[in-house]
Length: 262
Image 1 (cartoon, one colour):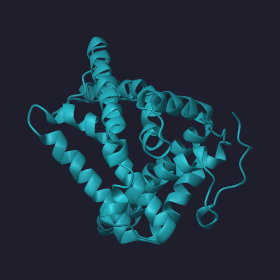
Image 2 (image 1 turned 135 degrees about the vertical axis):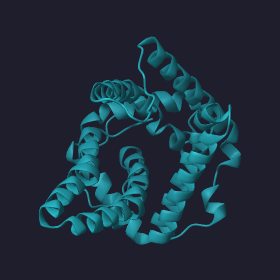
Image 3 (image 1 turned 60 degrees about the vertical axis):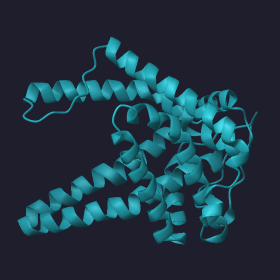
């Protein structure tokens, strides 16, 4: 399985491409995103089995997202049949991948416990406790990076490229490692659009009027929910397509990339 090594600035354009794909059909991509998020929340809230069931089913939810994004890119819409395209034929491999994801997630939880990370968020925390919580969350995010790398591309490799589950995890990790610069720029772009820019807008609004802060806060929340979140979903699909497949001219807002390499 060949993965292209892309330049760093390519990662920033995944987010731009995600927004371009979002503009193809905002209602359908927003519906797909909200349905995914709702299912994640509901599954996680199932007593006793929810936290174990969610990692198991996440690869399936991811391939459904990928199918939806691909259909919107190709024909501007999707049907229920499009969302489940190729899933029945690859269901055993997807279940296997879910099992690997569950195992990896369990290892993450075990490692967090061994390191004494306390990720419990409760009310009335002191400043010192908040600092400890922030440090533990930061450490957990760092430890999660290998897991994200291993499963970022794995579901779509398993579904579309017919790669066995174990190999798809390996190829996903290698492809992510080869493109760490692009992923770093992608993460920076998300931080700028999703955190820094809204923060700057709120600071400027607070200097002008308290009422303006309230209005700006509501508008920003709506933009993040109904524009940024669907664009992020689309950008995840585009990162796969960019690394493993030929780009589509209509959505190619990126600069030219380096030639494919083995």
